[in-house]
Image (cartoon, rainbow, N blue to C red):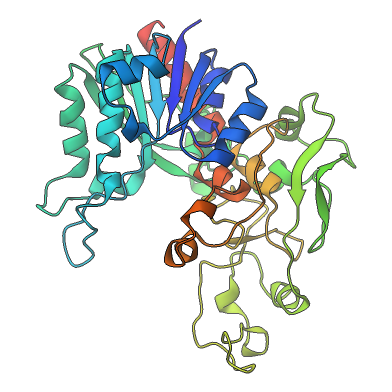
Length: 397
């Protein structure tokens, strides 16, 4: 069985997908305490190191932490710190600038047969303060280590996850020639794609409702961290998600006020809080009931049940509304959209105070990844499974 290790592991979506593809994942590295709790709960036999990768850079330090020889190293180091050319420049001293270098250091030290680095698709067009292509800098760094590097742009909806989530994968191996991207198994079906759909034999992408329609109905403030299922699974995806799992985890509705619930009732599929009438619009904070003049079209968008979901982000508890129920999505609904099986339980609090607010108030010790953050940050396991299967076959792992 090939071995992969997962660094910058988060809640473990990347590693879980590689497990589904037949890899052993004996070791994960993650900085956040609550994400580590999630990893340990779901993988009791895995060594989970709660550590800051920047503290492990020498040969001795890395070898002290990792006792296995991996065939593949996977991970999603944040690259937000790279400066962007133009007026929206980011701080070139941002410590996140160096995190991909730490990933590269581990690749150089452990010399796997392949590595996979995942990031947002915007990385492809990003430039540093000097105007150099960030993706080229990353590619050249790994080429100097002796790896052949490919850049894949993949949409999770094309691999069985009920979500349009496009991410870039930087894939390095020692094959010295392209192995190419994994082939899609699903297509986002439209009337104009009928010919392609028929010719390639692709399955239609999984829709929101195919993914979550069997989950118990909840109103605001309802639900619990553990509860029974109330209906049988209704689709193949739901049967896969449930498997033999007897308990439904993390299905707890947000605590909305009556006024907010009333606002939600006036938001249709594809609409958001910015589309409601003034009568139901948000009030100004500390404004004595005055209507706010600021509208956010990314807040509380009603998802269409007949399409794959929009991208689930780290703060998706405020981004999306259930297709029919007048509330935001639960953590479990988000996990279904990300293609986590129901047996995968997320630990830590459901939500936390804004990280920006904690930073501003000097409460950094309270800065943890809540359930929604862990889910939204993850690589969809079914997408990771496709990547893992492709590497196994193409590289004979």
